[in-house]
Amino acid sequence: AQSVTQLDSQVPVFEEAPVELRCNYSSSVSVYLFWYVQYPNQGLQLLLKYLSGSTLVESINGFEAEFNKSQTSFHLRKPSVHISDTAEYFCAVSRSGSARQLTFGSGTQLTVLP
Amino acid sequence: NAGVTQTPKFQVLKTGQSMTLQCAQDMNHNSMYWYRQDPGMGLRLIYYSASEGTTDKGEVPNGYNVSRLNKREFSLRLESAAPSQTSVYFCAIRPVGQETQYFGPGTRLLVL
Image (tube, rainbow over all chains, first blue to last red; front, top):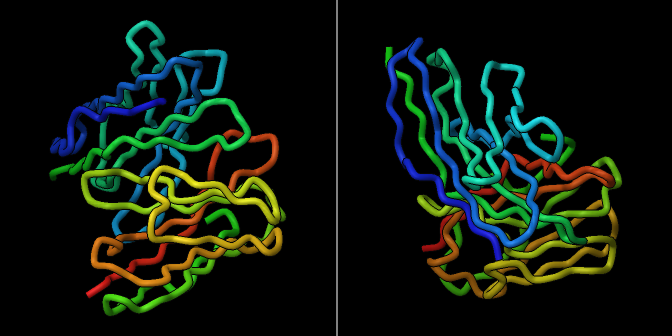
């Protein structure tokens, strides 16, 4: 079985400050890792993913995440946040197999303050 | 929303009523999924379908049934709704050869 822990349920931060949203996972096999973002009253949008290769992955809007196998972590970072980054962020894992079921963390609400 | 549509967008039911949530995709993907989202719990898998005519249980299947009669549509049925089924329901698809799932806009269900 696999599980995902998002250590912070709420993260308030001032505009232009850096932010880190933490995600740890547990799994006995290799996994694929994802960050999804959900804006108010909308569905989930893929932000970035790690499948293989370089452990540092980036999104088009300035977020990045680093896969750390030894620490079983996939923390999300942004060096300077904007008001428009206010949203809920979900870390998720899946593993190889026919179903590719996603296991989600409980989510982190990022609120960017002016 | 990656070509995934969900109907209805919002529904209010009384305890014991039944209803079907519809999910349709326009890209002929094999894999489709139903999740529910509850505050503080992230999303949890209810059922999934690897191909037309096949379905399997996920983490929280009790109280639900699904149907995948064709490749395009995957429906979720509540035979006798309970207040514990108040949630936001998301359908997702996974293109062949990809690991990523793409989500529809969701259905908000309130059971009184």
